[in-house]
Length: 442
Ligand SMILES: [Zn+2]
Image (tube, rainbow, N blue to C red; front, side, top):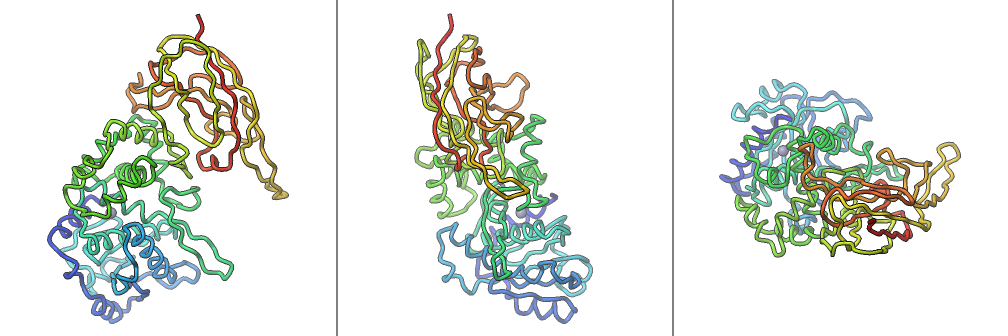
């Protein structure tokens, strides 16, 4: 997105200035009004724009959205919003840069930016045609202003940009009185909530092309190397995983509440229980299957390698979870037979015409009423983690058998993993278990 330059400057600014050096917004508001720009002000954001008035375009609501987001950012960092009631920033929503330059609101010292740029408690963003994406960019720059001034952020670029992406991602929920409620969605539930954002699609595309980065590559990105949409997507994914995955969320939240300095990566690696190899694997598992409504608790993977499967083995497969470790390991090339029986509930489907909900029950073959990733919902999947895919791509889970019964050859030495096919967003609605049995063949 061409924010590489913005990131460079933002980090330099952060290291030289303190909260005391943030600018007073009142003189800037005066300059804007004198130049005939519209000024919209809330508690924390004062915004000048040359965008023509168009009723219903949502521009008038932006300061209120910003204030709701500010409270959510405070909560993220364990801060009391009331302690920062006087914090204000000045944003310019720009259609024609020249008007802001002439008004004295776009100093020559600000480098040319493509979408947005932040310097302490001032930021600029180029107006967007899509309201959801405009709000996202506004909040992205707002998070920079927040973290630079209130948290003195000077972290490596992955955290700087990843946290801006994470804390900017949201949806607006209509209320009955016609206003909208700001709902933070670190992982968006559906594409319609984040029109034009495309982080999840970008990660899938990178995965498909074998270009997705490993976690240590994301953490190691230098400021000058960070700039593509893929970099923003990967940085978002890293911060989303560290703040959402049950193995990392608590220690990472403590880390974030401490100093956000240039030694952030070193302090991350020093967290109690930090295992870089495991974190890298969890990150690969996330980016390999990333989807809307990702549920880190239900998708968390147990990587433990159990004893080699030598005889018949049984397990219960929980419909409401992602990959589940069978407690035993398979040997590469060895053949196995499996069988699964029972019935689970997969939630319900709504008839689009009558709006009536029908409960979906499924056996191990799945139901063709709904499909996910080219397979019927609820279908039993047997998988293994492929650490070194032959196509040279990042490590990932590979489905090696599916359905109610069958035989297969293991593709790697490692744990047996089993799950039912379901979109991660709907795992919470699923209930029940299937009885799964497996035995090695001679
Ligand atoms: Zn940014």
